[in-house]
Length: 426
Image (cartoon, rainbow, N blue to C red; front, side, top):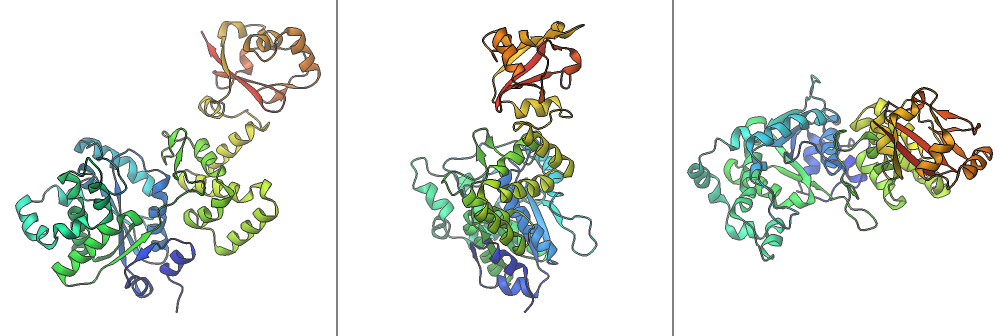
């Protein structure tokens, strides 16, 4: 029997649960499958990469992927995995979010191929035109309240003091109707999603069975967790976004580079295209030379290239080397500010760098790098002071406007890892 998309999901550890017909569906295909994406922000985040890659993997196996932007359901809010109700957005805000998300989907899905092009649809197109009475009569009658409250996403909220609103309680019906609509319009017979969506997805499978008398399938993948117990995709700065405006390529690269040894091989399976043979080599290298962090570097490269592009990957890698003595030249002011956001900072009047410039001894004293000019001189003579990653060899050096990075910053370093970021002011 040929190696199928289901086999691919299995060896990568991406099958949490599935209806029993899914292995056969994905072997005998092609199948049209969909995954929904909410539109509550103007960017997807790293938590969306597993479902995006699931659709992309299906497409590579010849199946037809549909990405459903939740323009309609985002106006309701999914209770799955939530302890409280989501803030409701206006239709205009949701439409704006969908426009930016479209561009991110194209990094994963091929919308141009002639054989099995990916589709992007917005469920607002059919949900916002529904007649309430007709919907309740034709769809709502197939769901008992007992059935709905038995689903984990609802049950967990009912056990809390503030409960669940009818608005969010109705989400299951709307998502089930999405599946029915896509079944009718595109012959879509498979829905994928995270394990927290199992109740909603199987409700759609049941609705298709009841209303159309046809089988459909559900496949859910595990929610990604970190070995240390903290939530995947969260940092001290918050969520890690796919938008470079929200999370810079440097920060994005650093997120993957900082992956725990216990997680990195699993992440390479979940998030990249690397074959099993490459992963075995990386796992062996990690066991023999863990300090080299080869697997983490490969993960960071693959993800940054895929989500951004090769140029962003190269610049992020260059930026990552700066804190270890790498070259600062060529970086933008924004990149410099990003890299050195956690180091002591100060200001230098732009006029002090005009003409002959400012004595470097004065600069070291003023920013606090040394307590005296005498110590500054001795540190320079010992070869331990750097300006913009270049060792200062002359204690008589004067820093001028020509030394400024992107007309904004100067970076001083003393020793191997002690930095100061100086911003020019008027």
